[in-house]
Length: 286
Ligand code: NAD
Image 1 (cartoon, rainbow, N blue to C red):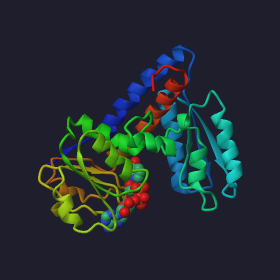
Image 2: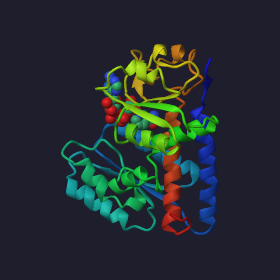
Image 3: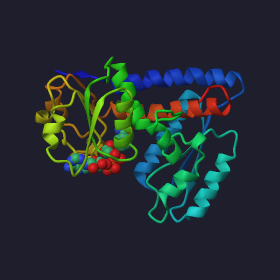
């Protein structure tokens, strides 16, 4: 049976480290601040934004919500981002995605100052990740790396397979594994022989968004299986991409859903906001 990597416990540890550093900053008169922008009334986005505000409050980070109506135009949104770029009490800016279809997400992300881009989606931060010289990492892949490290697993020389090639999960995930000297394969919807490729992985990361996509026959005995997916089963229960109860009998390590990558994504946003505050106050070398 696989060892279950407890994302809640690791996220708790990250949060308490952040909380301690936030207290130290506050004693120097600096309160890290995060602006969270939400456009429209998508219920899932609302839950994410509420959670982010709660998480900030728990560790002493100041957060401010900007809830804009669904018919906000792109210029208005970019004007808000620009005003937040210029506020010294706001260190991080996060625009909850997806945005309504009449707004160009890339234009909005590009308007965020790279120094305040705590999601690490700005093209210049994406480029910095490619060359391995970064201040911020996107929260989900960074959280996955933290989970792997917490279990004492070394990536060096391992065969790593990432299923999914999105800009926010799959691609940066592959890059972080590569930085740690993994031999990385990225699989996607057009990949041939997916099962065979996955079955060779020492570290298998699923970021697809399909229930029970990773089955036991796709997993090498003893492999590390990280489940990024968020899905609902026929009873509305939260599930990942991995057929958990069957795969845990084969894998060496596995992350559950809920309680795996999700809590880490939330914790890493707090860490990025803290880093942003330190960088903007010249307390950290870039
Ligand atoms: P996405 O839809 O942008 O990307 C999905 C990827 O899966 C694509 O690159 C696609 O090529 C690949 N794919 C689809 N069908 C496939 C198939 N049959 N074979 C192989 N690959 C296939 O999604 P995303 O934003 O990268 O998110 C992926 C999943 O992770 C979703 O379930 C999302 O909800 C979840 N997610 C979780 C967290 C978290 O904190 N746990 C954070 C972000 C995303």
